[in-house]
Image (cartoon, rainbow, N blue to C red; front, side, top):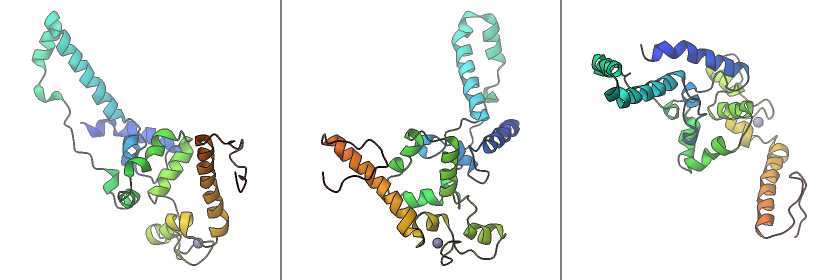
Length: 216
Ligand SMILES: [Zn+2]
């Protein structure tokens, strides 16, 4: 009983999520059910929902029992160990490939690093892609060569120089330094610029993509 009773429904739910782009099939299941303020995707499991409802019904029965014979009889017949045993859940953060990102950012501010999961309001599919990338769950050439063994050469398809890991793609590839990385840098700087304009009552550029003037 317990966990296995709901497992089929949990699997079915995850399959549907994956079909609609909300969950990467190689991403961490544990993280899917972890609260958003702890870096997870905050999905409520069937098991947790049933447990929650059961506890509430039990509490209500206990409250109402003094007023009714049927309820007090029900309470008398209840075995004390009827409640499901709480098992210590492992954390996605401790798992070798999935938790690597978390272990790396722990030195920084992990609360701020996960703020986007609560506030950014991204599309499900965008969020699923980002979490999968953080968990090394995407099929980069390095993962294909080293883990799935579906390819021999782990090197980056652009620079053909270094293993193609997620880290390399987002921040380490010399072929993207002058283009994609530069554009990303400018977009972030643009946000800083807009915030400074707002703060000091200067004219805020109407479009987020407009290049700001050199001096204001
Ligand atoms: Zn490269």
